[in-house]
Length: 374
Image (cartoon, rainbow, N blue to C red; front, side, top):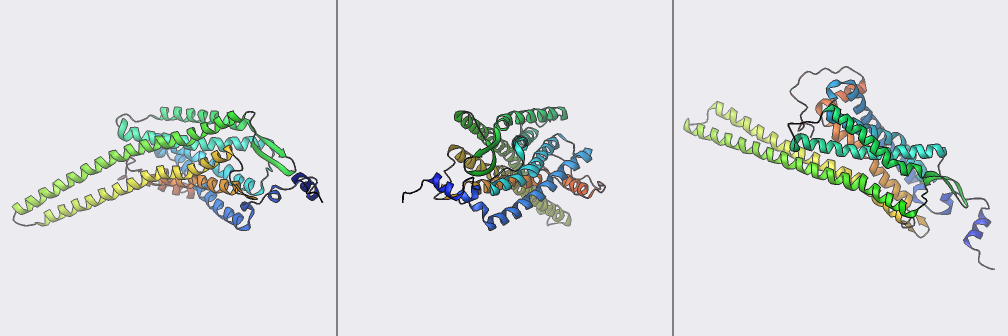
């Protein structure tokens, strides 16, 4: 008997079509993968949505939070809410079932909104970093005005929309021979243009922002480290002077002991604050890198060759995309923690807003200075 070709075998098995999961083995359809996906994505969805909505509601509700930097933080929260509502539920569904169930119009709209959310989030992370740099290092005496922040906001939204238009334009529903269902995917008329656009997205959405954030936060770190060193030197000089005065007075008086104890406590606070600032600044850059880089790398590999993650009869592209996408979505949880909840007043007002209870400022010993949010 003559051997049948692949197409003839498919005709024998299923004359009309086969689901994708029956054509090629895929780890995303395993029950353990599905269960893990539901649990992990639900965790990110709930925490990301609650945290970012809390940031938005608190900022709109309390005028004391409507500062220049918080304008950027609110836009960052809006981008994260978009991703929580659209990207977190839809992406796992399409990766597991390998079909698009929501029609061609929503294919374009959802794709465009997700892309805008990604660009907006990245651009406003840069805006926050640049604003902090100029407030602390570049031009501390000339802070950005609210009008300027609003102009920057409008510009970044326009720029994000412009970057997304080519992607949204080429998103459409496609069917494949002998494969059941429809697929929402990009279809470019030119392979060269598609590759150029992919490289453009990698540069604009990761390389440039990561570079800007690294430079800005490294400069801020160096500035705050010098300031902390000066404070520690000053504390050491005061302590030495107290020792000299105590020796001159013929012994340690109670007053000298209290002053020395105060200086020691002050030194401990400076060292603790320096350590805290270091951890936060490194976290801001590291989390952006860890959440953004893997997804960009996998996307670039698949753009180059969609079979690159296929081993034998098993296709690993969907599980790789879903894992890196989940890492990217973790930023929706990390961003409100790093950029809002570390601010004591912001934290209290967000909790108050979520409970919808009045917030009364009892003490204003904490002031919303640039160093306190770090």
